[in-house]
Length: 116
Image 1 (spheres, rainbow, N blue to C red):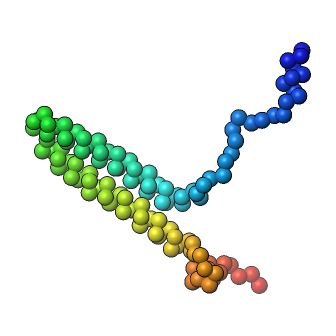
Image 2 (cartoon, rainbow, N blue to C red; image 1 turned 135 degrees about the vertical axis):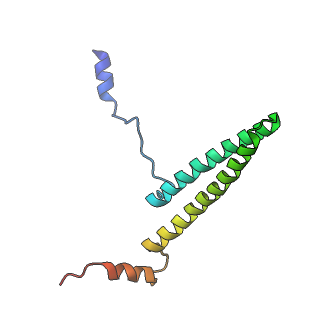
Image 3 (spheres, helix red, strand yellow; image 1 turned 60 degrees about the vertical axis):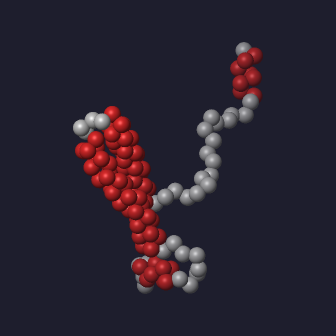
């Protein structure tokens, strides 16, 4: 029973230690568009690699693969721009400002319900 005494005498320490985040979490609309953009860019890279391999082999599938790679490149560019636009829209709608006398703070004050 010496082992039980040793275990109980030590201070309890959790295996999981929370650390504060270095940066705040992205807003949900921005994060979802960023995840979508990463997935589309990953698929675009795979399609581009397959296109290069088809062209090196000389397969008849090279032409459809090139067309698909061009279309996915356009979609990937659109998705990355969507992340930027979603971030800008979120910042404008939610009034993230650095000066106290901004119009965003006044808009937030105006939206608050007034109780008599």
